[in-house]
Image (cartoon, rainbow, N blue to C red):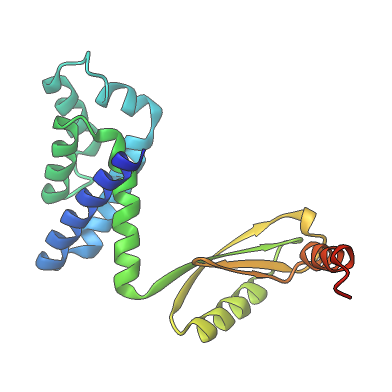
Length: 181
């Protein structure tokens, strides 16, 4: 698995360098997103990654699937992945390219999990507060987990902020059992 991820990272870094040089980052990102979704489809992958299907037939199928949806440079990369037997890595290449582009733009991904659904105003206020504390742009994904009982758990990068009722109760339990009170 590590080898597959490092291969996807290398392909994405190479594509990112080409896109940066050519000033076509947005095009590449959109192209890889589309291609990653198509290659992530089980039916498409069943044909594209099947060594029993002749390479010419797989290239033909790939061309039909992506016709008019991706630029020629992205199509060249995708065809290279197909020829090298790594087409299943395409969704990971797209994700790694997206991560590199987000890093270039200073975007940090965060996840907020709450016990109940947040309103749009609450999401905007939380995003603004996280951007203020992090000093950069935040893309916030919101999830609901009723087991939190109340409050909010926010993960920004590798940092976890636990303001949930369940988390507070667990910390109180740990203090009581350790005799720290």
